[in-house]
Structures are given as C-alpha cells and as structure tokens.
Image (cartoon, rainbow, N blue to C red; front, side, top):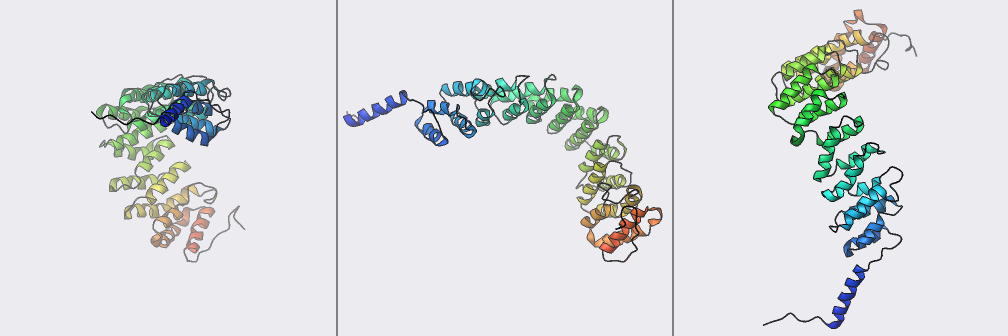
Length: 385
C-alpha cells in the first residue's frame, strides 16, 4: 500500500505558521486600495472590513466590492454595519459609497443591508439609495423595488426610480395595470404605461386602451397610445392620427406625431401632412412635426414639407422671424430633407406671399437669396440692421 510522502518538518512548520498568522490577523490602522488587493488574495477579511472605515471614499467603495466576493458571514456583518451605523453614515443616515460598492450584487444577504436603509421613509437622498437597488439583481432588491413603487405614500421621485427598474416585468404585471388605472400620480401612470407596452398580452392591451381613451392626463394618454401601437392594435394608427390634430393636450399631439416618424404607410404620412397644415400653438408639437417629416423617407413626406411652407409662414411668422418663434423654420427643415427641391419650394411659397406679414416676406426672400436667387428683402421692425 502506497502512502503520500511526508512533508519535511520545516515545511510543516511554515504551513502551521501561515495558518496561525491568518487566524490571528490584525488589521492595520490605515488601509489603501493596494492593501485591499492583497487582503482579498490572502483572505484577510478583517483588513477588508477595516477598509470600510477609511475616510477615502474610493477605499470604502472598493472594500465593499471586495467583500461582495467573501462568503464568510463576516462580510454581511461588516457591510451592514458600515452602511447604516458606520463612521460615514452619520450625515445621511447611510453611507452611499459602501452601497455603491455592492451595487451589482446578486446576494440577498448583502442587498438586504441596502434595502433596509432604502425603505426608510425619511431617509436623506432616498432616491439615490433606491437607484442603487435598481442595479442589483438580488431577489430581495427586486422585491423591495416593487414595494416602493406601489406605495402611494412614498415620494413621487422615489417611486418613479423604482418603477422604472421593474417596469415591464411580468412578475408585477397586475400591480402595473392597477397603477395605470388608478394611481393618483400622473407621472407614475405614464411610466406604468411605458412599462406595460413591453407586455403584449390581452389584459394589458385593454388597460392601455382604456388609458389612451379616458385618462385625464395627456402624457398618460400619449404613452398608452404608443403602447397600443407596439401591441399591434389595428386601431392604434387611427387613434394616433386623430390625436395629433385633435387632442387638447400638446404632449399627446407631440407623442402621436413622433410615433409616425419613419413610417412607411401612406395613410400615416397623410396624417403627418394634416398635422403640418393644422395650426399648432405649441413649439414642441411644431418641432415634432418638422422632425417626423424630415425623418420619414419617400416623396410624399418631402412634398408635405414643401407644401406646408406657405401655411407656416402665414400662421407663425406674424410678429417676428424664426429667431423669435421657436420651431418655425420650416424652410430649413425642408432644405435639410430635400435640398434639391428647395429653390422650387421656396419660389412657390413666395408666389403666395399675399397673406404674409413683413416678417414672412423677409423670411422667404432671405431663403431665395440663400439658395442663389435674387429677391427684394423688406426691412421689418427689429430687423432693420
């Protein structure tokens, strides 16, 4: 029978000394990131824990990061203590740098340390604490985010941070539908609609349809309409088309217009054309129209921009040039979209100058000259230099 060779007595003595050294580890008073590197390799957990006490924020963060790989219960003990009662937890009631160090943890035992502080209603910088939870994949963190998002007593900014992380999760579908239907905060309902857009299921579609038709807030209706389009609802395009010219909310009109950017359907381009020929007092809606027509391929989108020039000049340039009327420079948008036709488009617009203000005439004439033609450019109040 063979036996393994015996180690020399000197080797045995060295091994025993190494074990004794580790078991009697004494953490240094001051710890650097280099010390943490060595401690992680040698299993010096006391040194890693001491790193959580250092004034240097990078050291504290790195120490927590290294402890995330330590399975010994001492890791949770040190991290939890540092987060909530450590030397640098006094100012906010928690230490953000230590939480940052475990922000990608998959471990429930460590994540629970961050969850405990993030769930405190009066926590300072609570939105930041919740933000760290959103990057953790530990189940306890995901569960906590749901509880925070669905708590109507929690501050809106905190709820939104949590909801953004779990939006679209099948596990919380029922709760998200409930938020969309009856949460008192419009911003929460809007975010719920965005999340539900990713869940293409019959009950979700119905919830989005109800919100798109009846929600009192325009941003929620707009988000629900986009969700219906993503769900492939046949009536979604028709709903968006009506909204972009008839919804009382400028937010809805802008969302509806943007939903058709890049469309390949002739009927949708016709809707964009109708929106371009409907007066839009809101600059964001005008910007959406110009952007959608510029970003949609095909001759009909280009023609819509060209044909709308006279209407925009008459409608928007009554009391100033484009520098004083945001999102009104339709000729520039047309030129960016199809410069080869620009001169013909502007020349056609100039032939309809009968209803233009002085500013409108000056605007068109300046573009004629910009494009290489000759035209009389009138002097208008505020633009005589």
